[in-house]
Image (cartoon, rainbow over all chains, first blue to last red; front, side):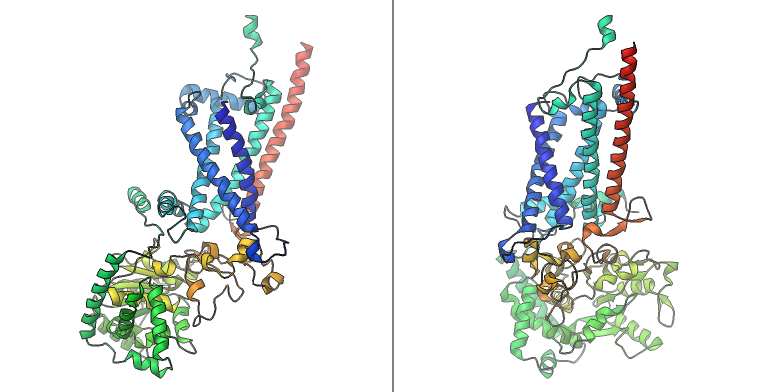
Length: 228
Length: 412
């Protein structure tokens, strides 16, 4: 993993934790303020929303970056692993078999991001894109006056880009449900992701967990090949 | 079915929610001239009803000063600059030049009731005495063939000129036979189609007429739909809410009298002057929302101190309407002011998606698996549990299998 990708990874991790915590509060404010000051001097919900929006914007920017790297990275271009050609399909299937046969067979090259991993990460980024569009629709919903601190172009652009979600998810309430529900799908994804990386580290014994810290892992040479 | 290309085109040419409150001097000057000319033409026309607005107003104890206050408020509501105030006053006096036919379809007559139940009428209410109501199911004295005859006459006489107000949804189930009207047993659908054919514009009043409202709530036994699903090829103005605010109805009529056009509409065909802003943005309890001070249950300390109603299910953040500004009952109060959260009555699917007394995160909605009532959170938690179990099974199996293969390895 390049330095850029590692930075993106950890920015995403921190952003996501903040987004989930603040998002849960916004959806259902579960703690009450105990500060005795009058309402005008404390901003519990406002701070939660502030953090939620700030990490959302960071999220959006990194999503655009990742989207760019999918196609134009100087290193591995992930989109090449998404093309459903024979090689990729076989690789996808083999990695999946490795997982469900509990590492009984490992007939693929683990020196690079495989097809399964790329598809898995693509699903994640598609979920993030869904969050981005539904979230920005909910956000522009609050800019109903059609203006914003940075000009009228911003809400106008958001409407142009996100209004389709109103049709697809059945109005603003549907967009809200989708935004809220997708959080669970993303948490599910994260759970599997963390598990899989730890599992790989233990069972492949190639130090996979180090990829996202130091940027690289080692790969065992196959003993059969060595003997030959 | 809508053609997919049409659908895509519709999505990407959608008008935004932007409300342009200042369109520049040039625009307003030309609008002013047009309005002035239109009003002088209207003034030359015979009034349809020989009632003088000013007499009505005075007889009800509203003085000229109050009337002018109302005029400036209405001018502002219509998002017109102050120079339009004299024209708005003039248009109000000429209200009896525009014929109105009012249809009552599948609903509770709440919009009519809201107008009738006024104890000390405002100018808005009084306008309905002046308005040339040529036909109104609930208010007219005639019945049966007499009423039909009067309707036919009004339609013939004011062909292509009358404003058609529609209150109530249109049942489409059982070939429309859930709702029939008059001695001929005409279905609501046919009735609406026939009368809207020669209307200048159709104004759907109340949430039933606009989006189907309560009759269209799940499971919608009568197959109720709103006016805009039925009437095609006519300007349609939606004034949702349950009931629609009289000020918004009057605003639309005044705008029509002034300009001869329907006001600027949003993507749901609601006039932007009334539905361009969120309730949440103009709510008197908004500071408590930002401060995280919420009513936890009815009657608690928060409720006594007028804290935010978000946690007891207020839908203000999702609802567009001007009731937080102009309010109801002669401007005395509105639901949130009276301590009840907004139930989003002016939004589509309001009964199914908005009108529950819980925050969004604990709302009962139908799970994607179909049929079973589950909340988003319960369903999400279910998924997470399933993931945890899956991971657990895989981890244990891996550990056991790993051990075995390790032992086998040692044996070798």
